Length: 73
Image (cartoon, rainbow, N blue to C red; front, top):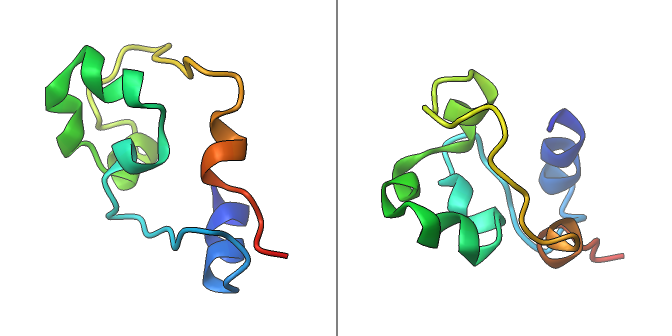
Protein backbone atom coordinates (compact mmCIF):
# COMPACT_ATOMS: atom_id res chain seq x y z
CA UNK A 1 0.00 0.00 0.00
CA UNK A 2 2.86 2.37 0.77
CA UNK A 3 4.15 1.99 -2.80
CA UNK A 4 0.66 2.63 -4.20
CA UNK A 5 0.32 5.81 -2.11
CA UNK A 6 3.77 6.89 -3.30
CA UNK A 7 2.87 6.29 -6.96
CA UNK A 8 -0.43 8.07 -6.45
CA UNK A 9 1.24 11.13 -4.90
CA UNK A 10 3.62 11.24 -7.88
CA UNK A 11 0.66 11.19 -10.32
CA UNK A 12 1.68 7.85 -11.83
CA UNK A 13 -1.69 6.13 -11.34
CA UNK A 14 -5.02 6.70 -13.06
CA UNK A 15 -6.64 7.35 -9.67
CA UNK A 16 -5.40 9.39 -6.70
CA UNK A 17 -5.50 7.21 -3.58
CA UNK A 18 -5.94 8.50 -0.02
CA UNK A 19 -6.19 6.60 3.28
CA UNK A 20 -9.73 7.87 3.83
CA UNK A 21 -11.02 6.83 0.40
CA UNK A 22 -13.78 4.25 0.50
CA UNK A 23 -12.21 0.93 -0.47
CA UNK A 24 -15.07 -0.13 -2.77
CA UNK A 25 -13.91 2.41 -5.36
CA UNK A 26 -10.82 0.30 -6.04
CA UNK A 27 -12.34 -3.20 -5.87
CA UNK A 28 -14.49 -5.28 -8.23
CA UNK A 29 -18.20 -4.45 -8.22
CA UNK A 30 -19.02 -7.96 -6.92
CA UNK A 31 -17.33 -7.00 -3.64
CA UNK A 32 -19.82 -4.23 -2.83
CA UNK A 33 -22.83 -6.05 -4.27
CA UNK A 34 -22.26 -9.01 -1.95
CA UNK A 35 -22.74 -6.82 1.13
CA UNK A 36 -23.81 -3.18 0.52
CA UNK A 37 -22.70 -2.10 4.02
CA UNK A 38 -19.11 -2.56 2.81
CA UNK A 39 -19.49 0.78 1.06
CA UNK A 40 -18.56 2.50 4.33
CA UNK A 41 -15.21 0.72 4.71
CA UNK A 42 -12.23 2.98 4.09
CA UNK A 43 -8.73 1.98 3.05
CA UNK A 44 -7.59 3.10 6.52
CA UNK A 45 -9.99 0.55 8.09
CA UNK A 46 -8.58 -2.24 5.97
CA UNK A 47 -4.97 -1.36 6.79
CA UNK A 48 -5.62 -1.12 10.53
CA UNK A 49 -7.73 -4.29 10.46
CA UNK A 50 -10.81 -2.44 11.74
CA UNK A 51 -13.01 -3.03 8.69
CA UNK A 52 -14.93 -5.98 10.10
CA UNK A 53 -14.15 -8.09 7.02
CA UNK A 54 -13.65 -11.83 7.24
CA UNK A 55 -10.03 -13.03 6.84
CA UNK A 56 -10.47 -13.74 3.10
CA UNK A 57 -12.78 -11.44 1.22
CA UNK A 58 -11.71 -11.54 -2.39
CA UNK A 59 -10.46 -10.45 -4.84
CA UNK A 60 -13.08 -11.93 -7.07
CA UNK A 61 -11.55 -11.01 -10.41
CA UNK A 62 -8.01 -11.86 -11.43
CA UNK A 63 -7.49 -8.54 -13.19
CA UNK A 64 -8.71 -6.13 -10.47
CA UNK A 65 -5.22 -4.57 -10.11
CA UNK A 66 -5.03 -3.97 -13.86
CA UNK A 67 -8.43 -2.25 -13.87
CA UNK A 68 -7.74 0.03 -10.92
CA UNK A 69 -4.01 0.68 -10.73
CA UNK A 70 -2.87 0.95 -14.33
CA UNK A 71 0.07 3.33 -14.61
CA UNK A 72 -0.25 6.57 -16.60
CA UNK A 73 3.25 6.22 -17.99
